Each structure stands twice: as C-alpha cells, then as structure tokens.
Image (cartoon, rainbow, N blue to C red; front, side, top):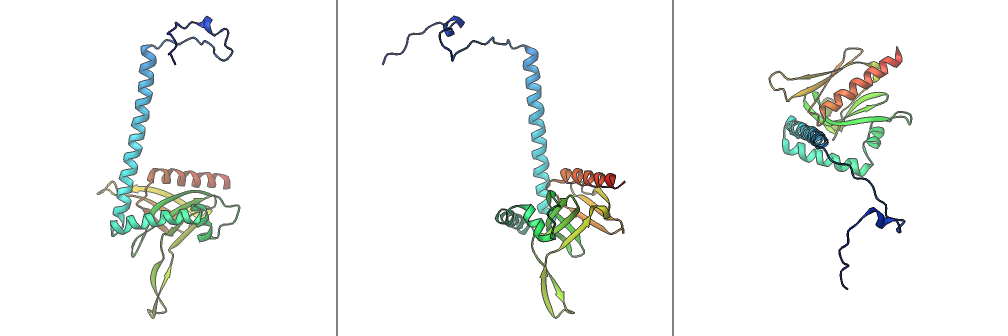
Length: 216
C-alpha cells in the first residue's frame, strides 16, 4: 500500500470530520517554563528528603536491636504476618480486643524500651488509645523460676489517661529519637527506633490534643 502523500493541515480541513476539532495553541513563555522547572525541582527535592529520612530511620530502626540481622528478619516476618492476617487493623483488634466503634488510625514499627532492652514491635494509634505490642512472644520465668513461659509484651494507654507524648533525641547521637508517653499517673513509656518518626509524633500529638479538646 502506498503511503498517503503529505498534506498541509489547516483548521478548515476538520470541518467535514465531526471527530476532529482545532484548538488554539498557547505560546510557552520563559516565565512559564521557569515556573514549571521550579515546581518540578521542589517536588524532586521533597521526594529526595523523604527518601533520605526513610533510609536513615530504617537504618536506625535496625541498629536499635541487639542484632541487625535478627531485626531485619523479624521485620520481614512481621510484614508477612500482616499480609497473612489481613492488615494491621485485624492484628490490633485481636491483640487488644478492640470494640467495633474503635477505629485504628495509624500503626508504626518501633521499639519499646524495657529493663531487658529494646523490644521490637508496633505502636498502634486508635480513636481511643495508644498501644504497643511486641512482634513476637517474649520468654519469662513463672512460678519462682520453675518453668519458662511466653507472652506478647503489650502496653495500652487510653487517650483520656495519656498526659503527654513528648518527642526527644539523644544529645550524643541525634539520629536516636524517642517518644516519651506519660500517663495521668506519671507512668512513663519510651518508644524508639521508629521507621517513620515524624509522622508518629505529629499524629500522636494531634490525637492527644484533639481528644483533650473534646473533653474540655
């Protein structure tokens, strides 16, 4: 088949075709191009900063554990568990017997500081409480050391009993960041090694402020 001969297009040539229509072209100006490049540059810069923060936080998350290898394997295992059991919402409800009207807002991989060392797990923020559950059961001696038993390490503080959520960082190692939870009875819990620290701080403080404002 012979290729059609080249023809010069003009708006008049679309008059007989109801599916073709001319549209005036807008002339690009230097200012338009400059603004587009500036917007693109800001988006790339923001994405790069977020990627750097995620990479740095993930590295710190793995370093928090006594063994980086075990931490990496444990985090992969937890991700597999989340997929297998239908998401963080189902795991949260099973772990803390949450009623139907309690909604899970956010979940964050982190560690809870204990006398035995940092415990890897997930912090849950719901419409009613902030909670933590270890990824795996921990061993402890029961009945005066007669035998060893296993149990998940859990913490749950109702929002109306939470006095403050205080962010802080180590003066010696600024990459080590913490969130201190303080109950109305002045019980303290220290969370660390967050993969997404900034988001955890923002949503915790927003939830705490919003809940207390409703109670005022």
